[in-house]
Image (tube, rainbow, N blue to C red; front, top):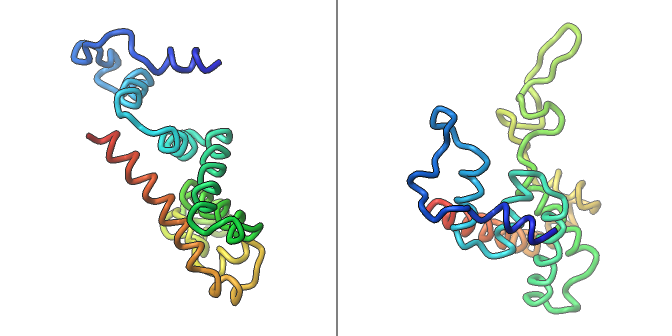
Length: 171
């Protein structure tokens, strides 16, 4: 299975200038795969990109496992408990799931006779505030505020992974 995936990611030709889209200069799957294969992403960065843009659950799981391991190194084994694992899950959700689940990213709720602005998002992007994060984690707002430095560190680690991956792809 992995060899098939690698074969699909590797281009058949080293000459990228002649290997362009034949669909009115539109970007094709092959163009994206070539760009990914030459961007020298780490496994964690690659998994994050696939989890975010292709909604790949196995890649999301890999990002979760590696992030828990990284947090374990940073906070120590006693610092990683069920709560910190939930922090990692919710932080991944916050970085990957940007569209509002209530209005499907439209910014408006449509009912039978009315159309109203969605209160959960800003132009279709879900608003993650401390209250929402605490509810997703399953703790009180007071406890979340007490432990928010750990959550913010996990979110910072994920943002570093995303920024590094996108900068490698862009260059």
